[in-house]
Length: 59
Image (tube, rainbow, N blue to C red):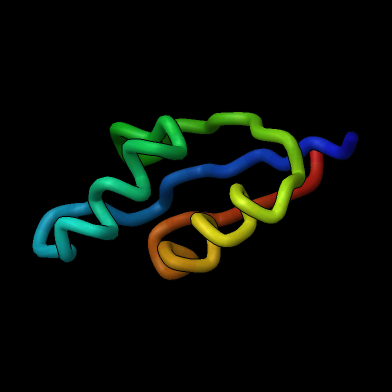
């Protein structure tokens, strides 16, 4: 299965609790942190909810 790299590029300060929890579920805690996930529908849905806070690229 394909992999996707997710990088947090903006802060979670002054964001809704739902967005903060989504970032936490993705494994992101600080700006500049990079995590790698499988390219599944669940992960893509979470990324879509916080797309203004993260950047993505194929691994």
